[in-house]
Image 1 (tube, helix red, strand yellow):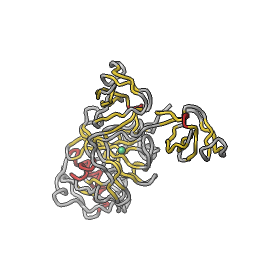
Image 2 (cartoon, rainbow, N blue to C red; image 1 turned 30 degrees about the vertical axis):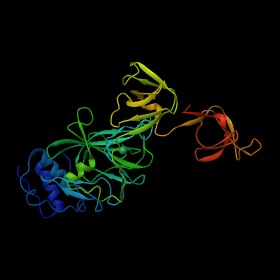
Image 3 (spheres, protein in one colour; image 1 turned 90 degrees about the vertical axis):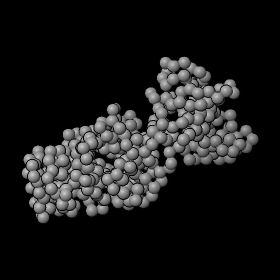
Image 4 (cartoon, rainbow, N blue to C red; image 1 turned 135 degrees about the vertical axis):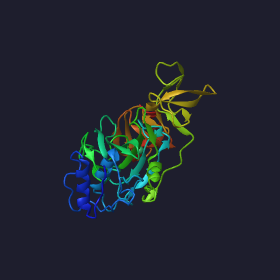
Length: 365
Ligand SMILES: [Zn+2]
């Protein structure tokens, strides 16, 4: 099939859609549908099959003016998912130390920090395969499948509060279409877009690729368009502390033998990147001997942890006569500071006061 686009972009879009017989992909594009320049003469020539459809989808796109776009060798349009200079890169793809309980030790995405509610745009035209609401502490996300330069590709947009706000599974999406709002659902400390790119399958047998590298391979300047690049180099070693009496096992499940039970705040060293059944391999000193085993990541933290062994009155000064600020419950997590006599200064959710020193116990209750 031979397809030509026309000088009039609007007519061009409709002509392409009609010529391909695309299944109601395009509808009627408004006159302002696109500011995308017409395809280059090579891309404008003969296209067929899947790529014809893709180009038709692209022709009807509505990419905002302040979003960077590039055209692939076959004439497809790809864009950055956020407005230029509206985001900072905060975490890159690759091994990392587990930042929060439930976090991963291999970061499968690129984190683009930007305010809550900012629009997220589809990087490529495609079909929605997943719309997953946040649940049980897991992030919500939208995944869109595209075939890009012959490679089946899934792009996941993670952390929206309400992933079904703009899209549903099976929906055809045009590049540049608003598909979500930035949020912070699931394990996230601040609003950001966590972008994942998978080739050949989404998870399972698929291959996770570095989104920054992938975008750069299509000349999309995701680093240059960021206001800041705060990605740190991949760590080679992580340090954790046990948050409870923690079993060190010979393998990554509770069916493996227990080598030792580690006291709270035992130092654990780890090479990042491996996590199996929630377990990671660590080194710990057991009876004076450096010992290798596996621990469950629900019971570790990057810093030492402390809690109140029993309910106490938190006071303004290290004295039983000092004013009472409030009563803290047994099990409350505290950050210990200096000692004064029989008193320990502690921070409790940002508030600082004094408690009897023996009420502070290691680990989390
Ligand atoms: Zn992330």
